[in-house]
Every structure is written in C-alpha cells, then in structure tokens.
Image (cartoon, rainbow, N blue to C red; front, side, top):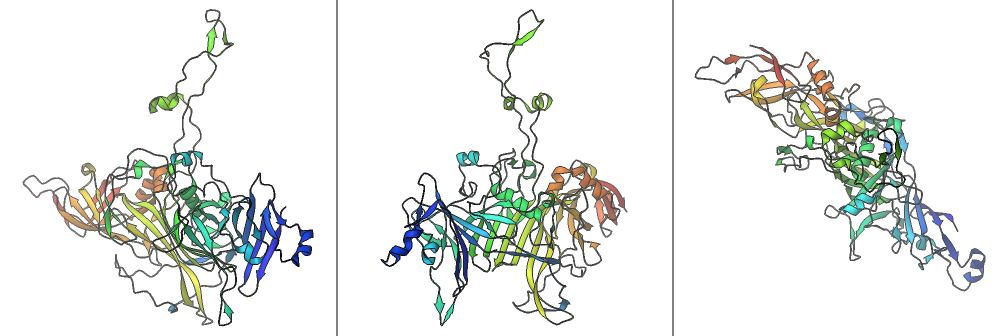
Length: 597
C-alpha cells in the first residue's frame, strides 16, 4: 500500500509530505474507527517483508538562487593594497548604490528516504511520523560509500546518475543534489518547542552516529561527510563558468556544480594528473594565510578516488535550509582511454594456406592482455576506447554558508598558472551578501556581490637559462587586488589577462629575477592567468594568446642585468628598460624575444 499524507502544524510551521512505499496501516483503515475507542493507535508496518518498506519525507524547497552582481573596485595603482577593515554587520555601504532588481529561482523539493525494518511499527500520528530514530537511511549507492572507500567499494561503485524517487536527495544549494552518508542521523523535536507563548520554527539537524550508537552534534571538530550526486543543469549549459540559465551570474555556476559532482562522486573515468604535481614547492595556504611546503606527489597517474565535502551544519526546515560546508580536492583529469585486446577465434589453414576457416573447437591458447604491452605498441596496434571529454578539472575548493535558504558567503577556488613563467596560482571567487543603500529610494537591501582575486601558490620558479636572462623568477605580489571581470573568449575555459579597475588596465605583478651573474633584479610585468583545464587541453593556444599581446613587456626600470655569466668583466651588464618574453607552446620556460637597453 502506498500512502501520501500532508503534515501541517501551524504552531511551529511544520509543513511536510509523507509518502510510503510497501507500508500498510495496521489495523486496516476500515477497522481503525472501530478500534479507536479502545485506545489502539493505528501504525504503519511493512506490507511485503520480501522487499523494503520505505518512508519518504518531502520538504519544501530548501534554497533560492539569486543573481549576483560583479563588483570591480577602482584601482589605486598600489600593486598590493591593504584591504580596508570590514564594515560592522548590518552597516550599509553609503557610497555605493545598490543595483537594480535581481532575478531568483527556487529549488525543487528535497526528500529524506528511510527504510523501515521488518516488525517495526510507526504510530500513525504526527509525532510518530516524525520519529525516524529507528529507521535506516535509504541512500544512493554512491552516497552510501564511506569517506575512506575500500578497494571493493570503489570497484563496485556505479556510474554517476541522478538519485531516484526512493533515495535521499537534498537540493541545497540550487541545482545541486547532495546526500549525507550512512553515519548521518536527523535530530529534531517531535512536538512544538514553545517559549513564552511563541513556538520556534520546526527544523531537523544532521548529526553523526558513531559505531557505538552515540550521536554527536555537528561542529567545527565533528563534521559530516556529504557527496554531490547530481546536477540538474541542462547538459548544454553545464560548461558555463558564470551564468545560471534564467538567473544570470550566480554564486555557483553550472560548471562549478558539474565539477563538484565529479570531485565527490565519480569513482570511474578519472585519474590523478602527475603533470600537475610538482616535486616540491612552498604553497600559499588560503586557510591559514601562510606559506607551507607541500609533500612530493606521485609521478604516475592513479585512479581518482572522490572525496566528500564536509558540513559543520546542515539543517532543513519548512522555510529553507542551513548549510555551513567546505570541501578541498586535488582536481583530477579524465582517465586516459584503456586499451585491451579482445579474444577472437583462432583460424587454421586446412589447405596449405589456401582457405582459412574457424576451428570447430577453440584452441587452448593464452590470450595476450593489451595492458601488458608497451605504450608504444598499444598506440600502434590497439584501438582505444573513447575517453570522457571533461579533460582536466580546475576546481579545488568550495566553501558555502547559507541561512534559511539564502546564501551568505560562497567561495570557489580554481587552480591555474601565471604565464609566461607558469607560476602556480589560484583564482578565488567570493560571493557574499552585503547591505547596500539604493541611490534613488534610499532603501537598504541585502544583495549578493561577487569579486575575484588571484593568490600565488608557487612564488618562485626556476627558468631555463639558455634563452633567458634569468635563472629564477620570484613573484613578491602574492595576492592581487580585486580583479576586473575576467574576459574569457573561446576556445578557453578560464584563461584571461589579469586586469584591474573599471578601465580594465593590466595588473603588473612585482617580481625579483636572478640573472646569469646571480644578481637580483626587480621588475614588474603583466601576467596571463591560465586555468589548468586550458593548459592541459590547449597549451599551444594559451601560449599564442600570451604572445599575441604587444603590451606584455616587463618593466625593469633601468636595472643592470647580466645576460650572460660574468667572466672577470662586467661588460655583460646592460642597463635595461624593458624585457619582452615569448611563451613556449610546449610549456617550457619562456624565451627572451627582445630587450630595451
């Protein structure tokens, strides 16, 4: 028997739909009236014990996506300006007018699905239908995989797919279906919580159940793993890096959601990229604000193991959800296509090589496995299976704070390089809610404002001295000011000149080069940010974009530079005004094109 009931409780605004599958009322509905006077409460029980009985709790939409405005502050000319202190909470920005009307879209309803154990009785009351403590979460197979997936779990994991109607799926944030794992439990009151005549909004909180059955509330030290199972964006819009259809610029773009699904749930088809793994370097840690030494990475590809993101708060309510979460990943790439020889029937020559025919019984001969052949032979003789078209992903961090269905703060980090020297860097996109006073009406509104800046992860880079006056280049500008809106043109994914200010002037990074005589030279130069997605797919195009700009010269301010090693004389020292570099289409160190001396 399948039931659908609407639970409404005005005191605490409870508003849920309860749907059952393979559950029946005991006693039967026609007998309920006769036993009601005897104090017997009807209950839901499993009907057919040969298949699971499911209880689905359907929530109203938990999130609203809003259009954000990209803000480009005036550029002061300081290459590393100190940011002003943040305004106190609730203080409107008097000097900046609020934008106009904003578009918004509401998410679809979310659902929690539970399996009812055989023999368990659910009292057919509001309180009974809200008591999920003895029920088992019914999850998508990928969501049920633990944070530390075993080899057997990884091998048995299904391909990416949308959760079906009988699996837990929370659309929080908009267009992204997430799910907790098997350790997640939901804590809430069964009756209204009333204080001084007022009842608080009914809500349920995600908590953790330990192996001993102990339940722990979420906090900074006890976080719950969650996976993004699916994105509801249309396939033709999933590569958009800024705009959500029907809304415009949003905190999470369709491409962000696509990558989050892969990063947290794709157990097949992706691998680590050893080309993105430096042997060792000091990196800028966004979490601490300090440089830290990274351990050496493995230099051979390995199957990518998706990692969940973690929430320190996840609450659902009839008026929207609360989310405080963070995820960090090493972006993988599409796995190279596998090559394997297929077994075929062995042909025998019955007439001295005149006619070949299949044998009646297959000969017992060993079949050579293609993965035992060398890569060169595989390329020559064995066709490859088609590979995924995603290529290299570039999203490495996601932080999301939402309150009652509205975003407060969202940070997304993309990995890339600064050309021509290819210093590793990260593009940081922050969308946060700010108070703005409308210039016409004087009303104060709270709108979403988006900004971007770049963090240098690899300050120092070795340079091939054969075609360059420098042997090392160290960037001393580690964080840029807020950028002008990046101008990304086809065929690039996220590659653009670093520009600032409303006039879109190129931002000049300060650098210190070590010349051929081991002397340090200060200079400034504009740099091109190239996503690792573009570097992996179209590195030649990236080099071409850099070399095509005539305004890419480095300003050396008349410093003397040793273009060759000094051998007892300083004749190789030349006072230089500008240096013009050419990026290498193969990814090697740039070459000096010309110098203004």
